Length: 500
Ligand code: MSP
Image 1 (cartoon, rainbow, N blue to C red):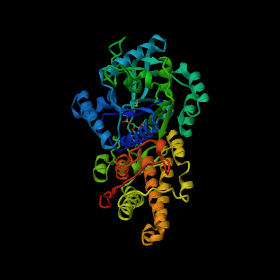
Image 2: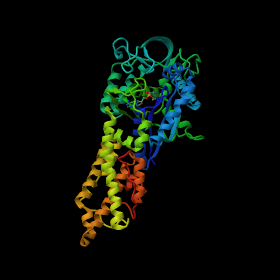
Image 3: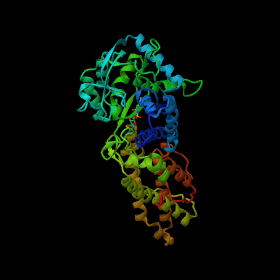
Image 4: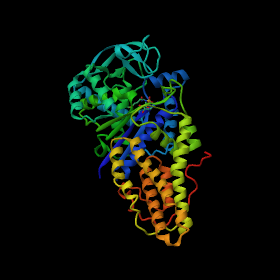
C-alpha cells in the first residue's frame, strides 16, 4: 500500500488559534481524507511550535513561565483540530522530550558532518518572526515588513549553520524538480532567493534559554526554526509508542504552509536535511493569506475572526467549504461574514441541501424509499464521465478549490436534471413509471457520487448523506455513476438549515 504523509506548519503558542491556522489545518485535512479515499496509508501531522522568542516574550508579558503559556495554548490548538472536523494522526509539541532529543541528535550529526562553526552574529532581528532580516528585507524605519514593529539590532555569539555550502545542491534540486514547490510563483520566489546568494545563518542562540539545549555547549539553545522544522521528522519516531514510523512515512509527501514561512521551508529545510543526510520531502505546497481588510490575519495584528464562533453557529463543514471554495487555494483572498453567508445560503443550503432533501423525499414519496433497479439515464452519463479521475488529478496537485468547482458543477447539473425530469409530473402518469424509476435511480446515484467526492470538504454532511442513502463506501474506486448498490433510502433533516 502506498503511503502519504502530510503536514501543517506547527503553530506558535504565543496566543490562541485564529482562522488563519484553521485554514491550513482544514486544507491539510481535506488532502489527507482524499488520499485515504484512494486507499493509501495516510499520516497527517499537526502541532505546536513552543520554543523561541515569540513564546518567551509573550509569556513574559503575561507574567507567566513560557511552559505555562505553552501548555495553555497548546491545549487550545489541540482542541481546535476535531472542532474543525479534522482527523490528525498525531499532535506534536516541540516541548515533547522525544522531539527535543531528536533535534539534538540530528543537529549533532549536522555538526559532525562539518556544517557548523562558531562565530558572532550581528544584524537586524524581528522577535515576532523569530527571524534575522537581511538589509533588503527591512521596511523604512528599520521595521519588520510583516509585523510593522521596530527591529532590534542583535549582536551575539552563535554557532552558525553553513547554509552557503548548499548553494549548488539547492540550485540543482530546483532545476531537477520543478514542482518541488508549488504554485510556480513561490518556486520562482524561492529560486531567486537562492540565486541571490546564500549566507550562513545562526543555528543557536546564546541570549535565549527557552529552547532545546545545544548538547556541545549548554549555554546555547537551538535557534527555534531548526528545532521547529525538525518536527516533521521527529514526530514519526515517537507518535506511536514502541513503534518507529520513519521507515514507513519518511520522506513527507507534502508540507503545506503559507507564504510567510516559505524561505524556511524552501531553503533552510532542504539544506538542513542534506546536511544531516536525510531524504527531502517530495513537495511543498504554499497557500495564500486569508485577508481581512487587505491585511494578513494574524494574532499580533489583532484583526482576527474567531473560528470557534463561526463553527458554533454554522458548523465545521460550512467553514471548511467556505474557506476552500471562496479563497482559491494558493492565492490570497479576503474573507468576510457577508461572503460566508452568501455561500452558505446559495450553495450549501440551496444547491446541495435542496438536492439532497428533494431527492430523498421523492424516493420516499413515490417508491416508499426503495431505489428502483434501473439503468442510469444516458443523458447524465457524459456529465459524470471521468469526474473522479479529474478530481484525483487536481487534488493530487493540491488544487483543492479547482477540484471543488468540478464537483459543484455536478451538484448543479443534478439540480437541473431534477427540473428537466420533473419527477412530480412523471409520478402522475402511470405509463411513465419506468421513466420515473430511471430518474430516481440516476439521482440517487448522482447524489451518492457527489457525496463521496465531497467527503474531504464536508465530512460530517457527506457521511449523513451517505448514511441516508444506505451507501457507506467512501472509496474513490466506487465513485462512479451506476457503480453503487443503493437499495433503500431515508429522508433527512435539512443538511444546512437556513436559520443557522
Ligand atoms: N511556528 C511557525 C511555523 C513553524 S513550521 C516548522 C509559524 N507559526 S504561526 O503560528 O505563525 O503559523 C503560521 C502559519 O499559520 C502559516 O504558514 C499558515 O499556515 C497559517 N496562517 C496564519 N495566518 C494565516 C492567514 N492569515 N492566512 C493563511 N494562513 C495563515 O510560523
